[in-house]
Structures are given as C-alpha cells and as structure tokens.
Length: 510
Image 1 (tube, rainbow, N blue to C red):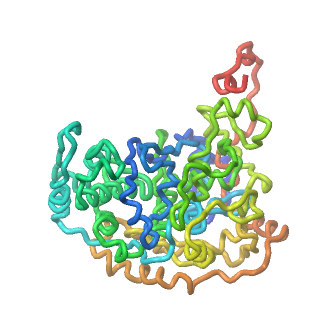
Image 2: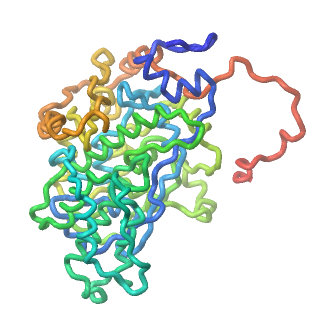
Image 3: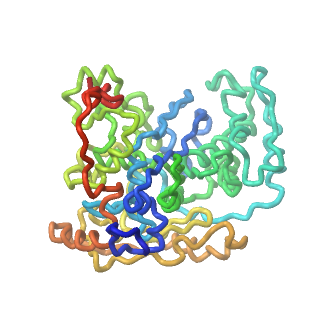
C-alpha cells in the first residue's frame, strides 16, 4: 500500500481494502470525515391489538413491538441518534467482520439479536426471492379495496417508475389510524378481516424497510420483501412459515457495516442494516455515550407467555428526564452530558478503550443486572443452541460469515489467534449486478443455515491474561490502533483571552 511519506502504516490484513477504509483517510491522510447517520423512521406506524395473534404465532416477530418503544395504542418510536455507535463503525473491519479494539475483537452476534430484539433464530433462511414483473399491479389491486375514513387525505397510487419497491409515502397511507379513529374493538367493528390484513401487511413492510433492513435508499422498501409481508398478513396463524428473522437482521447489519466503513465522504454517510441493533448493543457493552436510565421494574406491559419486554427495551422506555437527572445525579454513574459535536470525542475514547469500560457478558446473571426477557422457554433454549454456531446468516443475496471464533472473549472463553483467518472470498462477492438467478446461486448457503447447529465452535478453555497478550501481539501489527489522526508535534501558540470563554459544549455543565 502506497502511504504518504512520513506516515506510519502497519502491515494490515488487506492493503487493498484498507486504502478504501475510513480509518485510512482519517488517520493517514488526515481527512475530516462526516459522522455516520442512521436511517431511522421519521414517521412511524402504530400497532393494532388485532395483529398480535399473528405476531405471536410461531414466534413471528414476537417481541419486536415492545422493544421499539411503541405502545399498542400510540404512535411513538425512540430514534437512534447517539453518536457512540456511529463512532464504533469506524473500527469495523470487513476482512474479519469484527470491531478491532484494544481490549479484543467484538461484533454483533445472534445472541445480541435474540436478547435485544427478541427475534427468533430458528427457521428457514430469508434467502433471495423471484419477483415477477407484475408485482406493482398485484400490490395496488390488493390495497385498492381498503376503505378509508372520511377525514383521511385522498388516496394516491405510486407511479410505474418506482421499480425498486413501494415508496414510503404510499405505505404510510395505510396507517391504522387512517381507517378508524379508535383502535378499540368496540369502535372498529366495521373493519373486515381483509382490511385488517392489508394494514398489517403495510405495517410489516414499514417495519422491515425502515427498522430491520434499512438501506441507503430510504425512499422505498425493496420489492423482494413483499413475499414475507404477505406471509405474515394473509397466511393462517398456524401455517405461517417459520423464518429466521434474527439471522437475517444480523446479515443485513453486517453488510451495512462492511459498506459503511468504506464510505469516505465528508458529508454525513448513512449506514444500513439494523441501526437499532447496533445502538442497543453499544449501550449494553460500553459506557461511552450510554444514556442514563433508571433500573426499576417494568410497568405498563400486560405480561403473557409470549409478549413481554426484551433486554433492549430498557434503553427505549426508561430514559430519565433532565429534572430526574438533577435530583438523582449521585445515583447514576453512567450519565453523560449530551453534546452536539461529541463524535470525535467518542472515536478517541474507543481508540484508548480499557478493559474495565466493557461489559463482556451483559446477559448473564453476573453481568451487571438481571436478564429481562420473558418469552417462551423454547425461545430461551433456542438462544443457547445458536450461541456457538458458525453458520453464515443469509438475507436476500447477502451471505455474511459469522466469525464466531473471533469473539469468544465476550463469552469468557479463550480466543486462539493462531486459528483466526480472514473471511472467504464469497463473503462480499454477491451484488445486484452479478446475475438474476439468485435462488440456485445461493441454494448452498441457504441449506447451510438449516444445518447451523451442526457447525459450532468447540472451545472450553477460559479466557486469561495470557490470551489477551497473544491478542495484542496479533492486533498491533495487523490493524490500525488509532482511527483519528495524531499530529506529530503539538501546535505551539500564545494563549488568547478567548480561551477562557465557555464553549457551546461546556455550557451544559455549568
């Protein structure tokens, strides 16, 4: 790799990939890059209680709704706007599918998806689908029968120029609040089952397009997701196909991280996948940018055997107000003052991360707090079964290797650096320009997921300080320790009187 004269560039894992990485532009070339921005739903859709049997049947998106901070009758969502996960994206390496940190390699895993989002792992892989040429006409014909309330704005169809999928503004025309002013069953008897199914289909499309599988093109939901939304809306509850929603979210997040860390624009780039997963995982693991919350029993949730708060719901529903923080400031060790320009500070803090600033096992009883998932016993058992699998998660045409052997430290197990290897060539080899025969092309990887429990990491040795020393000897010469540019000499100048003035970011502490 041809680095500028005078710069220090280690012998990296893949020089060609590093020359496109954000850390190369910031640390070596000294460029000022924009902060990542998550693709969040600016306008939300509310849940209807009549949809819950379908969500609960066979664990289809069983706990996603309580997690996102939506009540069953309101239209509220918690946005993912913290700069801490955006700063962490700069440390992602596509060669290994892990965050390279001084304390060890880390990455979102199936365990994170299951505990934080409550999505099922067992089921068929959500592989590629063949979408016919008449998908638009079929979609408009299905929704053309839906009646609207008298106060709703006029219905508009989307033009044939929307070849990628239905646009967001069209989907939002089918909010449940548009067809009826009340969501109680006594006030909405005039809605038949067909209309309820159509509004559920629109809700699932919105959920997949702007929460679970976000893309850089945030104006429409990809058309290959139409099939999965119809399964949830139209299939009888007992016959809904069981898909591995959790592994699909993880695959989409991996692909979003791999493409995001190579965006070197000075503007605010967008990272796709599931930003909510990355946000919640960052709060669970690190103190950096963690919001202050009140650890108290849940309230307001009607508990049952399936529907209940997930572990990630703590960071969505129990945030403290400014008044509560002032009255109880001494009780919260993790409270941080929100600042407008904290992104460079968070990047620098990840550069010098210490071991005591990481919560390695947050889901165990000794990890700092009690697990908060309820859910069926079978779902909890499934999480344990998939804990050590190396099966590659699949979403559409994306096959993302699950580098399970590289993140054993988070489970308190020994991580053998000698057994670590780079990802196979197929990890990022599939793109939309490769061809159209996606189903036979990816049949091998879809079948591998069905055998995921047979391909597991066998490691029983506990982690020790010697293993960490081995990791540092592997880590230092093969990756970039600091993401930010470090000046060779500190600038020298006479102090000015304005240096004593409080800046914008300091005013919050006065």
